[in-house]
Image (cartoon, rainbow, N blue to C red; front, side, top):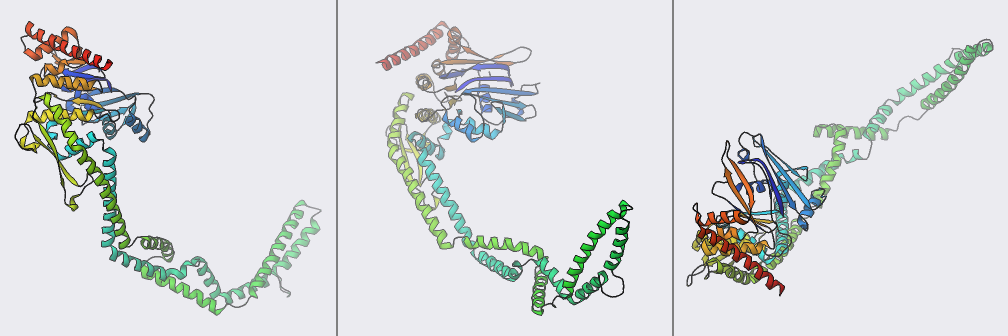
Length: 568
């Protein structure tokens, strides 16, 4: 429910705060006074388009601030959870700023918000019906959505939509798989050939293979070098070796260790050096005395290296990268191999299609079953709106199979006749503008009065299009009754409609150095004056005022009678 709106520098409004009633609120004022600015401000709060023309002349920016009571609104609470936003209490605050350059900023409960977030949240808070709502009746989708809303078919509709999209997704995948089956087979063959080529190299460490081959191919030379190194370190000949020379140095240090600390330290270091040289001699000797390389092992290593060079040349890629690529080739081959074949895909598509038909049939049959009752309810509500002979009927024509949609299997239209003896025909052929307006209003009220969940604030822009006189009074009574169940906000030029409101907001221009639109809530004599102006024009007579007072008295009397009826 809308609690209040605060404006600042919005078009002709300099600064204003308005509180709203939780029932039927009406906005009146002369043409051009700025009545629509209230709806503009509300539209901005719920994510509608903004532009720089909304900013008051000479100002840098305009701002609107909307306060909403969301107690009991499960949809809004769920929205906050889905968007990971905190909801401290049952009051929702929306703020929006528009610069004179056309830029816009928004906040929800003080936290920056995107326009898409405002739109999705706003759809749960406010439902605005434009003055051209009658034209919506000419759109087939409006009729279908309205029938589903009246019937409470939200779950059936969602099930049909989900089933249809699942079927469409599987069908698209099956068609793609069939068109790509040849390419898929070629790709799998290519991947298999590549993996067969490189398989011998996947079982070994290529760098180790290279190192082993280099060593074994030069083993005889390396063995001779090892022997020569060992002899230089230690030999039994008269020629001095490293160990013999080291022994002499050790004796010198040992002999002088008592005389100098340095000799003692060096003696210890030489002992360590001697041990390491002895270890080196042992390893070199073992290497020099090993067996010559196995020719078969050399051939094996040579074959692996030759294969690596051939594959590197064939694929124009270093062998180390090819080995890494092979992992991806295997993954892709596994993925392609795991894809279902055409027969399996076709079976899944058929299963999904059958599930869609079941869901669509359930939705369509529910619509067909309730349609006569809905028409009866609609006709009854049109009688007091000067359409006593109105007749309505839904037509259901099954579409060709290839044209089935998420909305079901039928083209649905609302046929209408306003006069006795005239055949039922599509609305666009027989309904006048005034008849369309009255039907649109009635259908909107019926949708709002469905008793399903918490309702957004219902807003009517120019609610009185195409009506006058006694019909306007009936519309006013209709809106007043509905206002006892949910919040309404309407702009009207008809005194009979305005008189029925629980809360009357007057918009008027104030001319001074700068023209401003002023907004105030009116009651008592001020309300009588405004209703008299709406009834009789500029020259207000006592007779006009008396008529207005009588109109207000009738409304109060009707309320009392309704209360007594409820009490009994």
